[in-house]
Image (tube, rainbow, N blue to C red; front, side, top):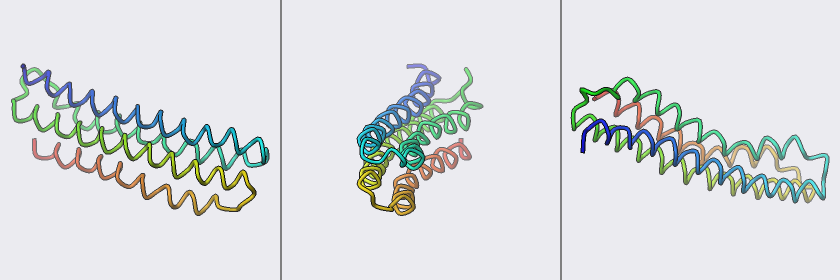
Length: 148
């Protein structure tokens, strides 16, 4: 396999897996929002924000791509391509699971808000813990890019 193909595979994994995770996470919390709004239509703003939280991991995939993009050239070495592949795999998998789990946290908060509980701020804070790991994934991509 040509090294450039391995590098592009890594970049593709970083984009696709983070996007798939965000799609699942947003859907999980969005489904909860629809149910909660039947009980409490005034909670739309809070439900919207919590439902959108999981979408950020998909953006991190793009950030990672733009970090490694300068290295995606025909003259890339096998070592550089392997590093980009590893970075893409790390960011993709971490972002995917982070987004799905964040969607579940947000879904629970949205359901509680639908039942009349005032837990928006607490849910937002708790959902950031899952987000942190996706941010660390971007940091790994950045660190790897500084050594290739």
